[in-house]
Image (cartoon, rainbow, N blue to C red):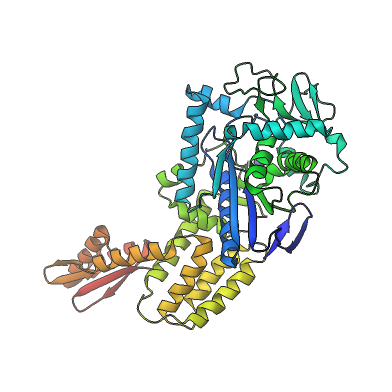
Length: 481
Ligand SMILES: [Zn+2]
């Protein structure tokens, strides 16, 4: 596939260190609160990317961390530890908070059909790994001790700003809360590898180290976990665009300095989900979670469908109206698939041709909206229903919209509904909604009694709800259009 690479600022053919195998790393959540749907947009797009690579035939090995220590309120190592803040807020221990929000994160992922990576590692499990890397960096002269903490010395690198042609705004996000100056730092962008002295004397989780009892900085966690599970050569590193600076910049600095060779050539960044009033966050405006979508009657997969309709490298604006439209389109798509008969023989040649098209078009920098368009093309294919279903099933291995599963459930429901309501010699058939059955029946009764005004009134009322009525010999049938 062709993929845009944030490190080179170019779109290029994706290649791997070992042919046929992808070592992939994803920055995981900091588990101090629920994920908002903006965070989850990144995980949806990374999930599609992983599944697309598998669809292409790669053997993908994907690793993700869970940050349960060391991530301060500002990504530039200032402010309060996020986990500690969460624990205080809920009067629980840090580990209780971590467990609760890790489970909540994966429950949200399951609802959005996001596959769990092959390796999921809490940061607190790999302390030895960080100590090994930090020691190595000190030995090589890339790190120094100051005020009790260990810092990475960014002035030792010929090139530190890897992602520096991103929008100013994107780069600024990571350091937006960095108002406090850390006077221990030799250079403005130096960052903490290991904390022993900080203003949080009550830090809950601490470990012994050659530099005293303390805890790791946030950036070292991802390098440590990736080196441990992906090995020295990572093929693909993913995250939200917020992570490009300083987090990923720091990951590259410390990993390459430690290894002494290039580490990860390919960087994939998903852009922001904005609300109509600006960037989505946990602290301002409505806290948009998967649970809130469900409470409001939305299918989480309608949100996935909404995300797939736009490109991962463009900011996406969320509004309830946009989501309503996406849900309407998603349900309509499911109804069209439900109308396909599973009977018949699949024409494998046609399926193959469509698969080729999908590989080529979605493989152009993960063009998911083209993937959605191809679903509609498949429905219009010059092929029998069984073949159309096979094409859709194939695409859905990447898009993960539960298309056939949901369409089949709908089909079963519709079949049940055909039993219909009968009264006084009038039979109503429909799509399984007792309330609508009753209205359609009332209209048929009005017609029989020659009360045409009432019959027309009911027809108009139903039309407004998207219901179409067809008169039959026995009474009437209705369907959603
Ligand atoms: Zn990371």
